[in-house]
Image 1 (spheres, one colour):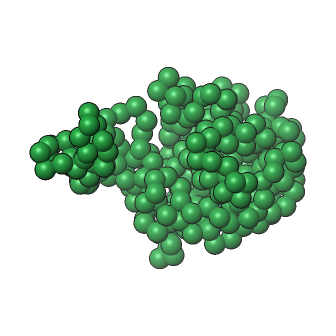
Image 2: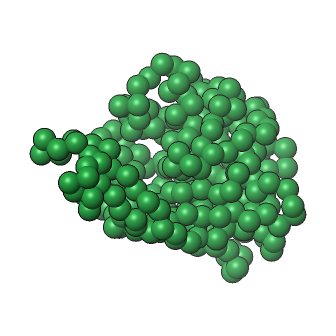
Amino acid sequence: MKGFLADVEFIWGFQSRVVGMSKSSPSFLLPPPTTVLGAIAEAYARRKGLSEGRASATMTELAKDLLLLTYKPLNAVPLSYQDLNRILAVRTSAGVSYPSTKDPYGSYDAPARGKTILSTVDERPPTLRIFAVFKDSADVEASDLWRVRRIGSKESMVSVVEVVEGEPEVIRGGGVETDYLLPLTPELERALSGRTGLLELEFVPVYSLRQGEPPAKLYLEGRTVKHVVSVPPFRRGVRVRLPPGYVGYKMGEEVAVGHEG
């Protein structure tokens, strides 16, 4: 197996809008794990020469060899908001090219778009630390994480400032303490202690991606799982008694809970 720790700096925050709502949908408070995997998959696809048209298939292929994909904000507090954005239509519909002076209402719009600001608590750029572990069969390289350029929409630009690659230590049995994003599957929820004060979010589990089932489809079908994570400035870990099928992965001082390989 191969593990990666990547520190990613955000310029201002990100936009990853909640699926299944109107064009004025809010942004998630933190990036969904599938969005993080999509950012890695985009860089991976550029290296492999894969087309954008098979983006969902590329994500599914990476998810198949994924043992762990999680993150934690190092110094960032999320704040979700919505502001008005002018949208210009560039398309052809019913033989009419847009934007068109004959149909201004069909050419322009100004919906409220959700965004999430990541506000720093220590005057350094807001930073997310990503922890990923893949099986040896995955053709993922450290260079793929170095080439991540956005997490979310095209406006959600990031800079990768450090990537560490290595073989993580596997912790089996007993318990571990982690402050990384954790999906509360039935097995893990029963094994969790010290949950008070954590941020709770509803995400599609990144490990459940299957061929022909893009993340948007899973959100629309309501197949989400509650996730918990600790955020600054009051960071605290949770204790997890490792149930069957789950292990702890440790690289340096970083510990997270993932699937057993």
